[in-house]
Image 1: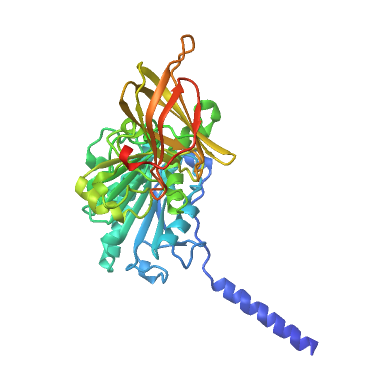
Image 2: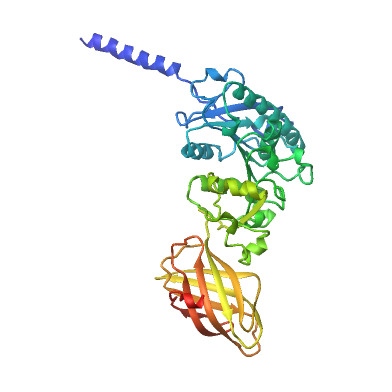
Amino acid sequence: MVRMDLWKLLGLVSFFMLCRGQEKECDNFSDLDFHETFIGTNLYVRLLLYTRANLECGQELPHHNFTKEPLFDVKRPTTFVIHGYRPTGAPPIWINHIVRLLAAQADMNILVVDWNRGAANLNYFTAVTNTRRTAINITGFIERMRDKGASLDKIHLIGVSLGAHVAGFIGAMLGGKVGRITGLDPAGPMFAGVPIDERLDPTDAQFVDVLHTDMNSFGLRGTHGHIDFYANGGLDQPGCPKTIFSGKSYFVCDHQRAVFLYLCALNHTCNITVYPCSSYSDFLNGQCLQCEAFKPASCPVLGYDLSPWKDTLLKLGQTRAYFSTTADPPYKKMSYRVDIVTWNQYLRWGVVVLRLHSGKNITETRIDHKLMRFEQYTATRMLAQFDEDLYPVQKISLRIVTGNVIGPRYKLRLIRIRITPLDQPDRPLMCRYDTIMEENTEVTFKPLPCDESHL
């Protein structure tokens, strides 16, 4: 009896080992060492397929016999994720994150374009040359997909840095008929000032959206999509090192922030409202907070689903949209429009410090990107952005800092202060009327409901 049980056990083990041997192994992104990067790599393009059925286990998809892969359905929407320059040869740290987050948006094919062999070179110019060759390779694959029944309308190309230009080249070779291209801080070196057929541009797809975070270094300046998002003006990002002594992070932090902002938006933890405007300074001055062109829809939101604003954006042509962020996830700032009407006797110039109180919690902002002008019966509009969202607001503190440290403190009469929540339009407006304060001295008050007759 014991011998029979032993034979049954051995048979069961053999069966499971046989089944395990028949399972497909996972195909991983190419992981190259520094030696390969140093001597230079020859271009070799791989396609790693992920779907909701194999989120944790990529399958390399053959460029020609892809119909034999049961997980790949050409009738489904297909998103290509295209990385950029890889000077170390290591896989991008964000690949697995973006795959999972894209799969949560819709049932789609996610194809990670692994051109690490070709992008991993100490010589950046070699990688730039390989962008065009990579695009030719992927374009041929998409054409074969189309021959098998795929719709170009359902193809979305997401390109990071050099990958954004790869996406642009693919789109151009397909006559601008792919559904969408998303460029995450398109690479600037070797692409600044070139003709539109040599970089990403709005004609490369039916809809092109671009996110800028490092235009003064590795990113590309200008407008290159139907909508261009500029985080913190598209330049230096909060929390990123300011000196070279921080090492690698000094070079890559601003550039990589585009990816992390996009991941946060995909995860629906950011929900960052953006404001179409002609410049970042106009945005900070509170001149572009209405989004009139998008009525009855709200202001656009950074993220994957831009369908509520797409038609308007296509009519407008090229739109610049600005927003500010915090240094850390979820990156979202709480924004208020602040309108002040002053009646002080003397002209004063200064910056505004605003505090919001909720219980024992306090959040503060300093509106100091320029000096504000306060004079008799003058309306001043400002944008106040806080790192924290405190609600309900029980008290407000206001200080106007003029830099006057020697002479007498002049008084300022505020006929009206009106604070409008921008990100939470359902919250009430907060007002205060006829307040007397001294320059450089904080005044604290409880907000009142806004009287329509004073608005």
